[in-house]
Image (cartoon, rainbow, N blue to C red; front, side):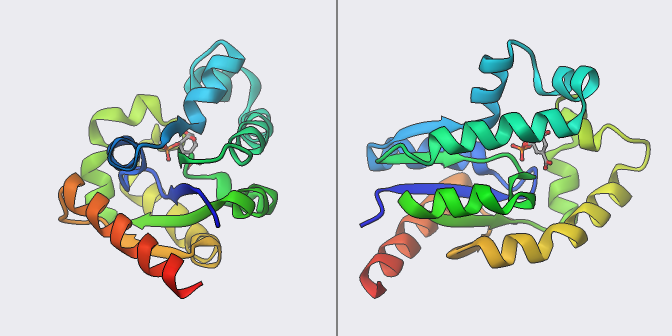
Length: 175
Ligand code: S3P
């Protein structure tokens, strides 16, 4: 049986906040891949993008996910763009149930408004348009990668976590 849960989804869908609470509630280890990358690189995500470029960041992300994918009994909050490399999903699939969090573009706009500096892909003049385009491009990647999908728009973190726990249980009893 799979013992870990990987949270995937677009920026601002609540993977980190929900993931932390989920890990506490289930007594699992919390791993955030962006955090692992920053520690390994010795610099922040925006610095990696600025100094080394997105391709280097994606290579570090592949390494971080490779390690996290082997950890049993973990909740893994993944960076929003990891679905673009199929190998990440293939590796996670071995030990993790993959839960995709979604939210409407408006909600994502609100949730990311104070933090555009921390998210290099959203540090653009027309953030709304950028969110719309990236979401449209990535939607099929999220859809084909997820075992479970939960829309977090308008939901409290507690409710999102309860929903994840319920759906993971259903998924386990059906498999
Ligand atoms: C990215 C999402 C970010 C981070 C990086 C790139 C993306 O993580 O990995 O800025 O491509 O969607 P969050 O989804 O946790 O914001």
